[in-house]
Image (cartoon, rainbow, N blue to C red):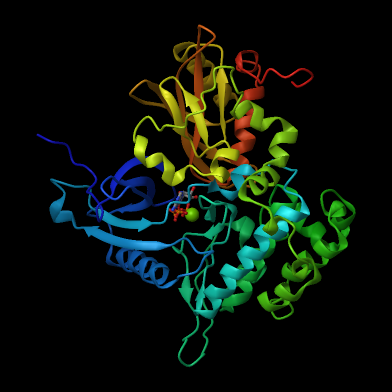
Length: 467
Ligand code: ATP
Ligand code: MG
């Protein structure tokens, strides 16, 4: 008897899980015949899926499919497998999306450091362009947060996840309506959502855009929630926070833009048009003139400074120049560009070079069966819930989850596989996030590498004077 499996989705096979959220799993998908790659977001259908749930998913697909813009993740196609076919395939909604081969934008940003003004300016303008288009189409996103901002193979920003979006304006007549549902995660929601009154759509996203700009510049979100329960938010309201790090290191122009976007009263808040015309935005971009390798260099500057990138790619002497993908040699070109190479999204494994869109990885001098118990104890001591998962081919696996400092839930996997170097038996360890904030995920990766059990075995780049 064959086991139930994922169907081919308009010619694409689902090959590797690369993410997942509250309700979904996201796979890298390949079309062998046409030499193309894509992503496939699967929302599983069960006998408990209500008619209301279906309507919500259908709404996400309808809205997303209608949006076409360079800064919006492209929706290619969709297939539904109904419950009656469950003997053959996993029932669910299958959305075929453009693959964001550059991974999460915020996976490249060092916690509490952020990116410099130039990179923030470059990506913020792309975010504004995408959001302006969405609003002009009459749609409000309502779930702007770091994990929903992805990068394509050339480093272009792609806004994704229209699961909470809503139509607030009829394009034909221009008539708008207020919205009522309370949604979004607390660190990103606008303060007017604390009351039960209906709210205007556009200012909600403007607030979200402001939180993203802060997160780019600071390397962390500004507060747990926009209420008096948050110390930081209270200090923001009183103005005390502007004397403190990181607020006091922002340029005057960046600070005035942030304050405009993060204005409490939605009627007083900047509009996207105000943001476009703000002096911080209108100045020409230095980065836009340069190639994608310079962009990748600038984006990961904070990870280079902290040494995070040396840990992710220690450059062993036998590093091969080829980037053949062990699974699908002829397909690697589709996600192998100067941008993804400079970002080091390919890692060296026992059997060759492999596409690893997560930079939260490291190499260790112990074989997997000795390293894994240390990783597990290390993570448990950091308050993370760990569960052993069945090994996949040569890798030992752990399912992990917990809550970050901002009380946002995260989930993911730790995979440890053998790695031979200089004739010794070591391991290659990848922390792959399913859901949650990419910056907190990186903080967890760092904490694991620095914990006393794991730290002595971590392999570092052999450069004099460095770590
Ligand atoms: P949540 O409700 O937690 O926000 P979700 O279930 O709505 O999530 P998405 O946000 O669409 O799912 O996707 C979850 C994660 O999967 C993303 O944060 C991202 O890391 C990854 N992902 C999603 N779409 C793609 C894509 N097209 N290419 C590459 N990675 C993707
Ligand atoms: Mg999401």
